Amino acid sequence: MNTYLFVYDLMQFCGHSWIFTNMIIRFMSFGKDSLADTFYSIGLVMRLCQLLSILEILHILTGIDKSRLFPRILQIAERIIVLFVVINSQEEVQGKYVVCVLFFLWNLLDVVRYTYNMLARMGIYYLPLTWLNFSLCIPLYPLSVLAKAFAICVSLPYFESFGTYSIKLPFPFAFSIYFPYVLKMYLLVLFIGKYLIFQKAGSQHNRVAYNNKKLNQYSFFPKLSLCHISCRPLQGSLLSPAVSISDVFQIQIIEFARDTVCEKHKNTKQKYRNCFNDPGLTVT
Image (tube, rainbow, N blue to C red; front, side, top):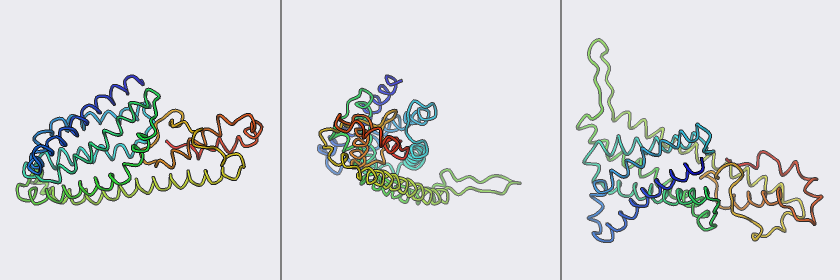
């Protein structure tokens, strides 16, 4: 399955890197004029990449990918709704600058993420790339949420004017669906969902920090240097995108202490085996 996942990551990397490179070259060549027709030049490839990302949900459901299901479903659903329902259905919105900003943020995150995933499938863990993968999302995820919310707000007048997706059922139902109200409700769900994800990430960080503090009471543990740390994910899965680089270092130190304690402290490993096998130390 690693071969299949590598091919999938490679396809996504090629698509997003083409989009990202195309946007940069067009902006350097034409300046601000390139922002207005960003969707017309890269929209098709962007839609294909986002449709292909639905396979990631199947990967998690079948167990070949150990990522968490709820955040991935939320991320993919948000992008599909914004891209296909909001932007693709309104030509007036496609020429807005916010579309270019949103695509830039999405593709920057995905180019780094799929590059890291590809190398991880081959057992290669490059420290600067690891730092970039787990740290870049901290500022860019909130910015992408704001960009999506702004794109929806910009589209509301057009949905109100043209009545796109608004449905009025005939008698005897006498029931209508006014789509701008649906989008306003979706905005609320968008911010609530992101708040829950960031809250989960914060609790995960605090849990790892607490376990690291608990391990620091043993005299041999703080003496470990960064040269002993192999930058590799925990057994069985890639690290969650919500984990920061400081957590990566803490987790790898725990891995080292659990698996490769030096001869000088060979007896200490057995003494503190229960601490090193604490399930709270596992991040998935």
